[in-house]
Length: 146
Image (cartoon, rainbow, N blue to C red; front, side, top):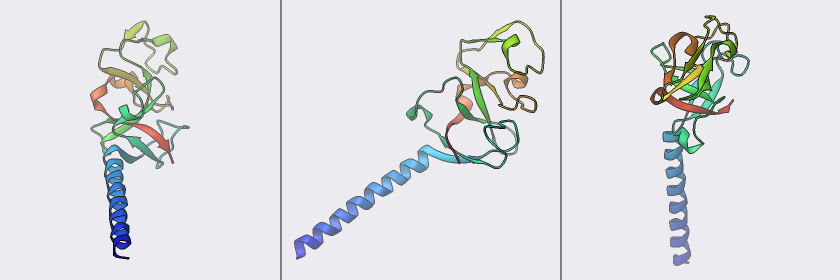
């Protein structure tokens, strides 16, 4: 009777330790952010929560069309945009959807940067206004929309 009780306590302690390790890993790797504004409509709505991976390399490298959270000086401390072009790729101004600045010609995204756009181009403040974003300024990659 004593051995089985000791084994049960040890098993429970081990399970608890594994669960605690997983909870710490999840907390350090993932975070939720709240969408602020309408720049990502219709994909994301104002007030919607999204789960982002801070260690986005674990869920795959950043690619075209990924939705990312980027450091910003605004009130929330971040903005959410979609990656449109990667480093080394050419932005052809004639093919940028809803190019509000009506630029012409081409632009090559510098190494270590991405070119981002909001899905709601009419209201979005994005790379068309502030230029390419440093990859180091990407806080995380959106993995789940709630």
